[in-house]
Length: 489
Picture 1: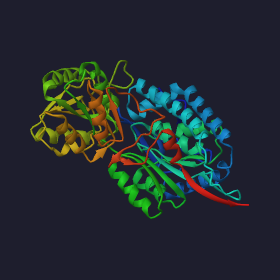
Picture 2 (picture 1 turned 45 degrees about the vertical axis):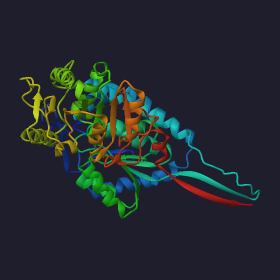
Picture 3 (picture 1 turned 90 degrees about the vertical axis):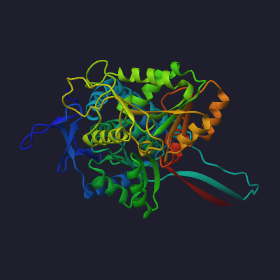
Picture 4 (picture 1 turned 135 degrees about the horizontal axis):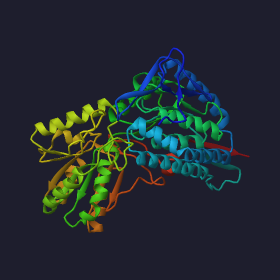
């Protein structure tokens, strides 16, 4: 079904749905075009512009101009416009969900959930930014005061991934806009449509022209031009660690502020006293949600030796029963991977694990899936110790099950990864859980429970999983600069 947000091209161009980039409050259609592929069919169904450096410059110039006036508006006005944006997102939930599902490949219920989360986060940041305050220390001098205030950092580049195009975007754009910044968004080239659509709704919500811009194109061209632009003061990026390192290198010349939410290969430690059967459905959901395409999913399960055989048997049986199919089919749990390169990488990683002697169990794909970037739910056991693949992020429906003999061994193996985004502990002893949580090298740790990361708690990683934090008041403050004003009278 065609989204109401897409238009058909006419004239000399082939009949195809299209969206432009969003600059200075209008939709722009520079050429050349870039195709957007449906991962369930491998067919191109839409086009967006491939923005070069000249269009990035135009977008940043407009954002710089708009930000000068926006930062002088009242916090209440900015809050009200963000709430209006959230209402519009909810109003257009059905169309946004259909568009998001088609460009990402995620099942329709998951797309609808992302729309709900996007609206909720927008409302949250509207209120959290309204609570920001400065400091007036009581220094005891009646003719001198020191005022510490927060000011917006300036123009923010928001560079987002394909797996959660809108919820990751709003964790960057909403707090930045709420504190008085302007935003230039660069969505992943495989999933640009929902971001441009959100920009259209931002104009309807009351954001002035130029405040929220969207440029479309690949990271190597459009993203690089945005990162390099001298008027971009802050870069907020979610994506791979390799790209994050490149952004860090390029941003160094301008000493730009960075917020990097990068890769992960997250461990779960299943202690011998854990009520693991009660938590098994949540564990599997966390490991295989969105076909394994998100950063803080559980990739590595470290299982106490006494639980090993029953855990592996029941875990594998449930995973083999996960339903794979087209995102539009009812009751489907796993859709396709987003694009061909992701599929190729997962295939190569699993092949290397198999070649090393590991046992690989995979559910057969339904025979009707003759096209699309589908990959079967996969469970890997008997992996050789210290296998290199354990240190790699796998963006697909693949998990590793590994036995351990004592908790110190499990902790050491969990922390051996170069990543440190999230970790999970299951135990019947809260003291054990807290001890492991403190010792695990991860930005977030769940004990005896799994749920979505909360908006009022900071989220981000240690080690090569990134810099800075998103969400919470800390994620709002990240888009401000501290200024000290000394007053004498």
